[in-house]
Image 1 (cartoon, one colour):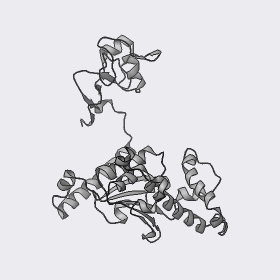
Image 2: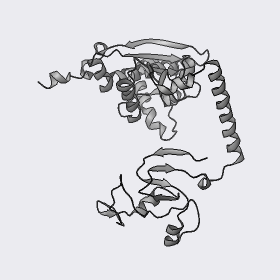
Image 3: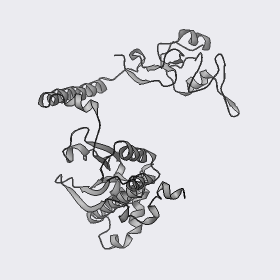
Image 4: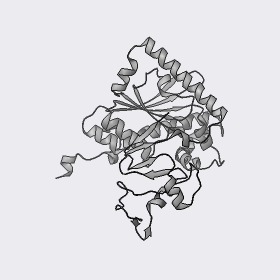
Length: 314
């Protein structure tokens, strides 16, 4: 196995142990120790033969740069732009992990063979293009796989998932996906799909602490506070409260998608783009349409509209 994981990542290369560098630094013959770097070129600008890189008031040499990247055998080679991982430098694999990998990879091969037999040329066609009509924003829950529950093939749906399908204006991961889907893939539909029985929503109705996720769930707790009167009419901590909060979270996330400059600009260009709010029921596998479908800026508050660039220039 000689797997190339990435190309043209500066001139960083993971290779065999650099004995000369190790002897110079007095390090042991350990393939996971960091070796010295003879020189560093683009993207880290260090003149040839220089031993340091001036970054503000600190001085960081190539050797320190290499060490800062972890206890791996690293060296920089100006002549090789490939990043290679040598198997002999990998850590040992337990029997359990090996069996797990073998089982899933075997299942993958069986699926690939079956798919190609049933639909000759499927993978060749899939490799050539990606033109999905749908961006799916859903929950990370393993029981809600986007393609399967709407019976779409690979390549037909572009997917972003996070805990409790939350859309916020500060999530650069989601916004990057949204921009690529709208501006590059030219999707026609954006679906925000929550699911009843969502653990993230249930946790938002409690005062328990779970860790970093508490900050993420604060977005859902805010919805509970805003719509408190609706929740006060339902039994505290009940399934009815959870289902209501699940639906409100989907609706708010869908509206947040509509409020983004990405979607607003697409609409201002006259592009056809619809934003939908759905909820999936785990108990029967059926998706409930919440009735929310926004197809243009006319149904969004004016404060979120973007001014036409031509008008803005005058």
